Image 1: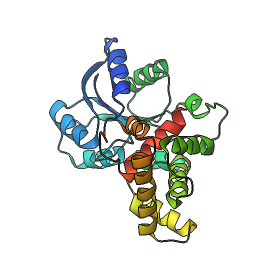
Image 2: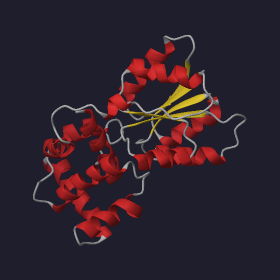
Image 3: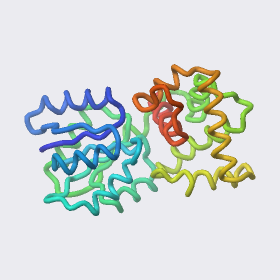
Image 4: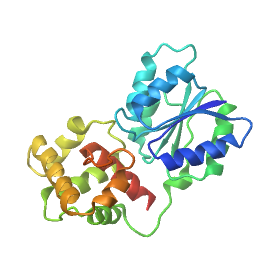
Length: 249
C-alpha cells in the first residue's frame, strides 16, 4: 500500500515515515505539511492511502477532502483521518466528505499499525481509537489552555485572552471548524460576549500581538513551527496549535 502522509508536525511525519517504512506491506511515497502541498502530491504520486491530519495550514484537512471529490484521478485514494478532535459532529462531517477511517490523537504506533492492517483488508468503515479519547492527566482542558496562554505571555486582562481561550475550548468540544472562523466561531463568540465579529477578530489579534512583542516569542514560534518563523502567526494557526498543545499535555 502506497501511503502519503499529510501533517504539519514535521517530527511526527518523520516518526511515521520510519515506522511505516519498516513494514513490507506499506510504502511511504511522500510527505506533505500543508493542504495545498497535499493536493499537489496527491496528483503527482497517486497514493493508495492518505494519512490526513485536519489542522494543517493554508488549506485544512476538510478542504483537502472537499477538493478530492472534484479531482480527476485515475483512482481515488482512501483517506485515513488522524485528528486531535473526536466529536460526533466532526466525524459526521468527515464521513460526508468521503473519509474512510478516523483515528484520534494522541495514539500509539502499534494501534495505528493495527488499524492500517484492518483497513487494508476492508473496503470501508470507521474506526475510532477509544483509548486515546479517554486519556487523562489530571488537568482539565480549560486549565491546559489557560496554562498555554500564560506561557505565551498573553495578557490576562486583554479581551482577546478570553476570546482565545473560549475559541480553543469550542474547537475541542464541537470539533474542528474547517477553517470557518468567520462563519461559525467568531459569530458564536460575538454573541457570547455581546460584541461584533470584527471585535472578536481584533481582540484575538491584539492579544496575540501583545504576546508576540512583549511575551514569550520563542515559545510561540516553537508552538507554531514550522509555519510562523519570524512572523506573528495568524489567528487560525495559533488557535489550532493551542488545541493540539492542550490535547497533548
